[in-house]
Image 1 (spheres, one colour):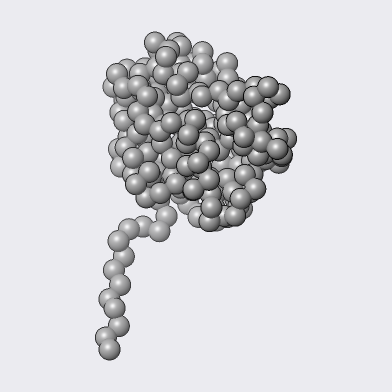
Image 2 (spheres, one colour):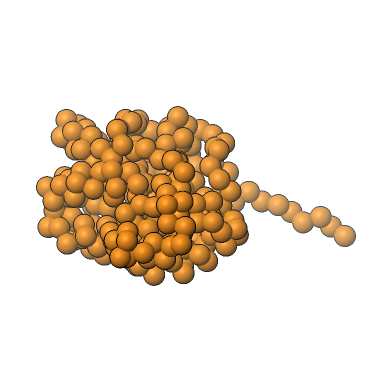
Length: 250
């Protein structure tokens, strides 16, 4: 019996990622989201002209292995730092990489005002509904009924309030030119989210204004579910409130 012939169909690592090693939990969706971000930058030929501003979260561990110029921002302040970078270097493509705790809790005013001013930057939000890096407690995007370290019986609207659906909120601002929400829970979802990434950066390159791509990512550890159940849990919880699709395209 002949052995099957194996063919390499693609690079193991994205071109702009120097190492695939990380200490994130099994089943985490953030490495997948980062991969499509880097692939988009490379495919658009922007690697040498891009500056990223990284927030504080589990994803920050990748900042030392990205082959892209980066600035580290204080917790929640990435959109304001990105604004300064873009105004000083208008020919650069500027993006932020943030989690929901960083963007929607610590820095809500920063991203809202950046979008309202129509700053020509792109913000990438990794939304899993928990503060993963600091223990898995509830964030402003956690949905009703979601278990976290600070809502063990599930988020309760009367006690905790309602989730902030940030993509929908930003889409209503006149300065926002493109807003999309995708996920990394399946191969099809990854492909759709990557198209959103491309449109967001093309929006910036066309100087149309602010753009946001929100990516729902798995966090089985913070959700108290087995690793393999992360994608299905996301579909049953976060995705029912933070509905996926293009929310605005100018």
